[in-house]
Each structure stands twice: as C-alpha cells, then as structure tokens.
Length: 239
Image 1: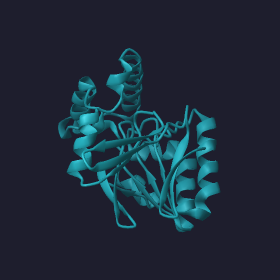
Image 2 (image 1 turned 90 degrees about the vertical axis):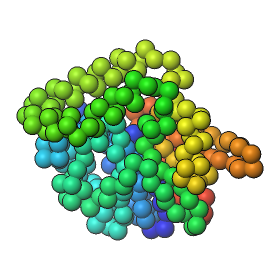
Image 3 (image 1 turned 90 degrees about the horizontal axis):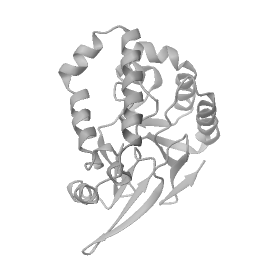
Image 4 (image 1 turned 180 degrees about the vertical axis):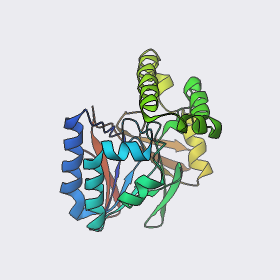
C-alpha cells in the first residue's frame, strides 16, 4: 500500500446502480495498493442530512468502512452537491474532512487539492448562490425542515441547476485563468488537482519563470478517471 489516489465527482445516487457498481469495484480493486485516497467533492449526487442519507447509501458506507479497515486513509473535501456531509458520516466511515482548499505535501512538493468550484469565478450567479446556500442562517433554516421537504428542495435545486447550466456558455462553466493563477501564488504551489468542471485534462501554464500544472478529474457518469501518485509522479488515468 504505497500509492496515493485522487477521485472526484462520482455523483453516487441510490437510483443509479451502474455508477455505484463502478465505484465499489474500483475501490475494492485498488484498495490493496491504496495508501491514501482523496475524494475531491461530489462523492454523492446530493446529501441533505447525515442521519437520513447514511441509511440511503449503506452499501457505500460499507465499502468505505472496508477499505478503511484494510489500512487506507480516506480524506474528503466537500463539493457543491455534498457539502452537508457532517460528523456522523465521518465517524462511521473513518473519513477525515479537509478544508475546501488543502495543501498536500508529496515528497516535499506542495500540491493544492480543491473541489474546483471556487476557481469558476466567471459564473457569477453560481458564486452568489454558493455563498447564500452555505450561509449559517440558510443552513439553520434548512435543518429545521423534515427530511421529506429537504429531499424535495434538493431535487428542485438540482433540476433547476441542470437547466440553468445547460443554457450557460461553456467558457463561463470553466475555471477563470486569472483566478487559477492567483491560487498558485496564494498557496505557493505549482500544482493544482481539482474536479467540478467535469473536463478531464492536464493544463500546463507558464508565468514568468514559473511552470504550473493543473490536473482536472472527470466525472464518473461521462469520463470516469482517477489520479495516482506513484514513484514520485502524478498520472491522470481513465477507469
């Protein structure tokens, strides 16, 4: 168990057995080689409440428990779909929640890992909504609702989001390059790994004397992929 893995945007949903099976098979296949696993957000299609969603996703919980018991350390950054994952979930899965922007040290190389939505600053409406939906007052009101109403609200927001997204220009849905450059400098790193945009790729950029690399993970519904850190090298691979 020597290698470090990164995945993002699995969007697990109890109604989609194909993606669920793909995720479970991947986890069990790689677990013997997986020293650490970093899930960079949107593990689930949506998450409204630990107590409710843990029951709905018991097979996923069991899989995460299994690899954790086998020695793999699992870390999670919240995504825009599952930012309500809380302490109950982390306790029963032994997963550690990381800050939304986290510096990982890979053999003395600083690597920034993040979900990726904070890089998409051209999507002004989304950034405003993100700030609103994560506001303490908004969350407090949401948590007072019954699980039935929470589910309906989440389904409505998801449906509305998909409709709005389909009408937006592609460039707005991608990262803002000035924002990306500012993240490199702010976090003093030359490497960023993220998901969110569902645009699997490796982007190399030069700014002055600095060379930067940005690894983008694909989503598991259309372009399932993962990154493995092996022999001091990052590789973006298809599943």
